[in-house]
Image 1 (tube, rainbow, N blue to C red):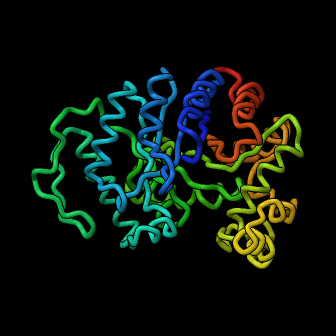
Image 2: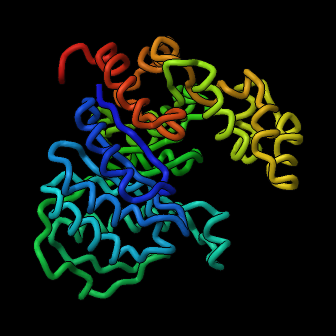
Length: 334
């Protein structure tokens, strides 16, 4: 079993150093930082984290080929991998449509853009030339890195849609599918498997991280409060497919959306989050997490990725998961 942490890029930069060191001590395998627009740069954060860790793999979740050119993405990946001694994983995908609209970018041909980006970056990070005459990338024969990368950096794809999930199986070293709720894993894996089969690849060689929302604390009520706020912000934007699995609809979030978007009252919105809505993520004490995650492991998950909010105190959440949850599913180190 493999375990990772995912954090948003909305914290003071110094926080990530302490959290990454705590994650390394707790036995986590990977540490991912998001790169949402107009927040802190994940690349800069991870470069700093590389200097205070020795074992932890580091990754971006996610970069996109619209706001960061694939050539610069390859440069950053190779350089960061050099800085951290071969511990970097490049997480990329097509980006969030809402964020791209903020800067006037239309995500044209998202799946094509991602696949062509992966193919080009793989060549560059293998020390080869990467000419391209695709629908998204048109590069000359002068497209190559003028320095030797440490290795070909593994590429992970973020995905929610069936087509992007297939792309994980087709071209990626790993996947970062968002699972809302965690039981969505059973719906996600057939798409990844189909992509792997179509490309003649072995699914066992693809590191699929079951990416969940998590909130854990010694006190269940405190853990629930942290997840309620997260759901209050984002619940109304979830797809009907996700909500159907929870027995919910967008109508159930109407009052919550109004409280957040119109009234700007997150406390009122959080109070409207119901127990069925909390099932979008995994919440409670360590025992609650273990009980819920047993189903995910039974479904075949070999990598569990704990994502925001983690808990009311992320540092304490890392400690709780490291002390109780990781040893339960990984009694001895792999």
